[in-house]
Image 1 (cartoon, rainbow, N blue to C red):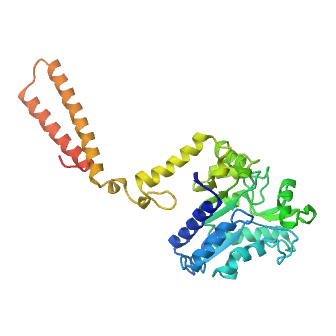
Image 2 (image 1 turned 135 degrees about the horizontal axis):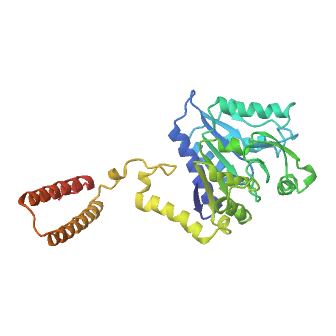
Image 3 (image 1 turned 60 degrees about the horizontal axis):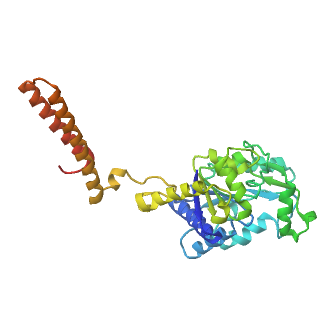
Length: 346
């Protein structure tokens, strides 16, 4: 799992939007090969969506061959309700870019058979070959999508009763009246999210710092469903400084040091977006400074060999001319091999 720390919400949004843009462009989607993107709602991704719209308007990304799957939707709320997640997504992203309506997948909280709606949603994900990148946010209690504390980490898309804390938190979107907040929702499961080939979670604000600490520094726990990120082979968390308040100082420094190595020592031009090495390290270290370091190491090794050879000579009472010639020949061969392996000139 990677942890990227940025100064504030705006920098986090910029990083995530750039990442999504680059992943889409590198994938090179087409009519027959859509880029599948999982998307969240709530306050966390709003900045990301606005910056993605800016990228689209600048001609830096296209959503023509992108298919999206939203994490959740309220049960019983009309699709055109100001607080429905259908409305949220169209207002903040979809109506501002060139995504095709048929490629937008949002759960229908007004379906006649809610269980069947959830089954069809999972089937549609499988039909398109799974989700390439799932972008998510979390609540203060560490829930991802509407997978509240206690949710199974093997859960799939289903009907979910919302926790009282979640209802209270969402009341701000309904004029502060908790009686107007839906009590049920359709949500992807934890396993649905973790099945994506890559998962990126946005965590910002001091009020989510405990959830981040539980996710990063403690074990996998269904009471903090975001902790399932620890089990994902390509999990990425992008947070701001405020969200790190509950982390140990050494934890924050550790993850920052990894990013420093990536950018300052290995070099961003040698690394892929996901932190993968773009080429062999022997190809990277072609500058003279690197060669000088390898030459010094080689000289040190050869000096050690000379010292060992002298010790052997002193301890030996006699040696034949054949043995001396063999020793010289062996050392010459060994030296040539060392020089070749280290890519330096003797």
